[in-house]
Length: 568
Image 1 (cartoon, one colour):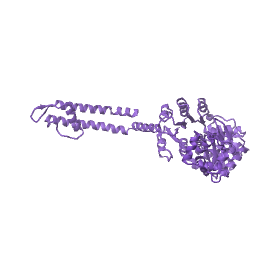
Image 2 (cartoon, rainbow, N blue to C red):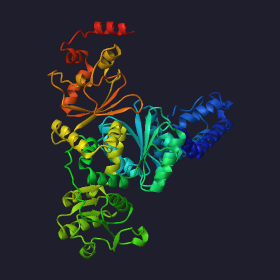
Image 3 (cartoon, helix red, strand yellow):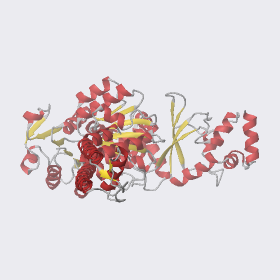
Image 4 (spheres, one colour):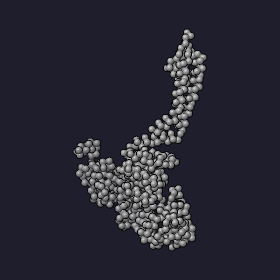
């Protein structure tokens, strides 16, 4: 509001001064010029009478000549006043119209509206800084799951594009530099409902500045940042950034998991996949032979490091090793888009290929040329731009690395179902046979679509009947809760993946005999129909009584009042 008032006062200062001067001169003139009454006596107007005449004359109302008919001298002065004040008013109105069309003024109005909307938000929200491919995918996923978001981006075209998106929730947007602390404050960092800030700009320096701002201005708010450099990651970690996501290291870790534990990799993909999308097929990257990696940038280095840890021999193809550095493996200088370079890297004998340059056209060319020379290759390709997805779908690679998708999916899981992150971290410590068995159980529950993963808290808000029964001293086990209300002797097609009790006490795949406590948090996996039936058990006393005891029992208003009074 201060900016708007300042802009108005600055631009309207001169027109207002001119208007005041014009009125002052007109009034003084009418007061000084003598008039004449009906008896021929000389009369002078008072200041109020003169101001009254000038006011209705300049507004073209025209009440006539009062209090007495004017003399010629008065009429001449009034004529001058009419033209003079009209010119002054035209100048003032023109300045106002010019101000309304001014970009700075419109920006101030938009920012003022944005701040009001953010200030009035009553539901928890996340502040997303950067609305590129990653930010767009993340905001879409968050709003799809009923979360609220606020977006800040330097690029006005991007923020305007967001207004055209078909999102389920309204998303306030601010066109501003997110690295400025005042921008974060204006965007709601200080709001008591702000639950986290996500820094997704293309600049490591800006993301670092945002993380610093969050931890200094509001340390209790979760900060999640994108970083493409190990130095920046270390810097962010040094002052307590909650989650730092490097898409290249993340994908390299996934590839390493697929190499030594394919079922664990598949399990991770199913539990973190986008709901209602088709489940991913298992992949089995070969280990018995050498891999050719094209591009020794950040991605190539991360993949090479992981393959080296797996004991796999690599041949690196890089056109500018003097800029990227030389790897500690066989190096072939070239782009990899030419058959000669790939032959020099012994592509015909290789078992795997990584096309990992920062140019989509080159990566597609490398894959097509390599597959012509060796159709049996296991192909991993890096897709830099979302717009090229159609082309990458056609190239039929075994694994596609898209940085924006990796970051958006990881943050979506961290914000939407954080317990999944805890579960997958613990699943990595188990052997692959354990993961294969769990994958087999999950595949029996769902069809070819990604299973639903939900978190259930035993609280008065999420499970009032269950919470009430346990507080009254009844023993309810996990197996009892997961009975089918339609066939109470049959279990629901739901798997309990994890039980969280207290602070950082986790039980992976809890038994059906596990007694539930107030405050427990369950991570469940199953079909949509199964969760619908579980919702009846969690939300209705009668349904819960039926699956526990085989009878509905009283559940009317009077009975609930009596039950509540007895608890008190």
